[in-house]
Amino acid sequence: MFAASHLRDARRDRAILAGSLVALSGLAWVTLWLWAESPWARYLQHEGGVGSLPLEAALFTLGWVVMIIAMMLPSSVPLVVTFGALVGRRPRPGLLVGLLVGGYLVAWGTFGVAAWMLDRGIHAAVVALPWLAEHPQAIMGVTLLAAGLWQFSPLRDRCLDACRSPLGFVMNRWQGTSPRREALLMGIAHGAFCVGCCWSLMLVMFGVGLGSVTAMLALGAVTAVEKNLPWGRRLTRPLGVLLVFAAVYAVAG
Image (cartoon, rainbow, N blue to C red):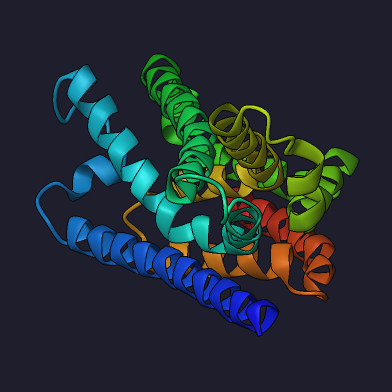
């Protein structure tokens, strides 16, 4: 009787956690949609010269984190739920799960800041180099080509394998001796592997602009399928080929 009750409680807790993460992602999607329709939408497009540099950086970082919650967090629900089940009987399990998710967002937020700085450098190069200003399609072409070639990288395969094995990932990194520290570091590690899988696709998203909710939905769906469904790995190479062809079209079109 006790075992059956405990099993029901565990299932209920997993369902509540998964539902909470999905609801958080849904709220982030609504926030992005409202932001994209507001006068502040230009900050999602990471356009230069729309305000002071610190303000641009802060608002872009905020938009980037909201985008990661909307797009990428759903693909990590299995890992977060697995971790939640593991720590469910420890003191303050919600805090540990929060630290895991926080670490994940720290990893992606760091990448977002780096991407924003790269974008500022590209804007400066366009101003300094007339050829780039006359051929903006070259920048998108290079971005698409890099994303396409990365789909064939063994390092990306390794990162994807880590993301597709939530139970193994959690068990290999959880000792339980310093719960808060381990939860945070596990979240950062998971975020780093997720960045390894998706950084090139996110740069494509960056080039399109964070205000394109339709493009974000499509990329988020592809990421979730590739990371979680049994046949998701079959998308990797065809997506790479598609991106390479898109690069050729962007330059020649």
